[in-house]
Length: 315
Image 1: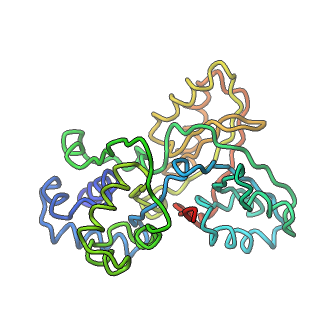
Image 2: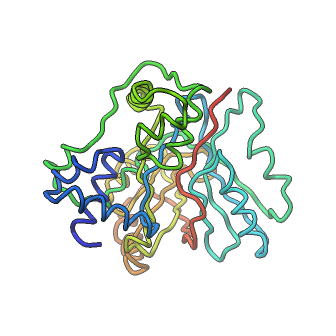
């Protein structure tokens, strides 16, 4: 990407629904240039803006899942997982016989979930599922996309005003479904999709974003942006230093996600690097200096079948 495109990607990461006119002003280019570069990057599959639901605010718990499969089953099973509404970040790992993904479930309600079905699925040789207790960095905030100096970034950064409760419900399904397909869908098109007036659409959208229930996120393909090495890390960290290590890794520009989990390992991370040499340097020069990390397992990402997903709202 050239400097304009890098700045545009960062701008959309800061606020995926920012008007092109506002982005153009911050980037000091024409609105037509911004629109043209956006269409180019989107049509190439490098980026897209999508709307997602914060499941935690609706009583969902996030789980990280690892599956070992027979060599002939990973593509089929991975594709089936990617098509589910309750999965996100579905990766094929290692030699193509392992799948890693996240899912969200409301187990306390007795709701049937992926965690119930997978152990009975043929071709699955092994499975581990651990609860994600707390995230310290998420892909939507990945520092690797930063291109604007803070003064300009501050003009675009969207900051929701926290509210005490979430009111997203079944009536919002059509709105959220349209935004899941394209987070930049216009108010006029959202009005057609929902049957509401444009003013109602604008009010509901602003309320859901402001509450944090609706997340407008930039979905990006690291390889299309020049980052060819991606891996998941599972680490065992000394409990007394767990939060400190997580907070430190969250500041690393290579890290797109880090979170504390249950299970035999207690910290999981995803790293994005320029190439394998860069990944090697990160593991041997950055992670190795964190003395509290006792063990680490690395799973190279061969292919990503799904990134940001959406969950169905409770009826």
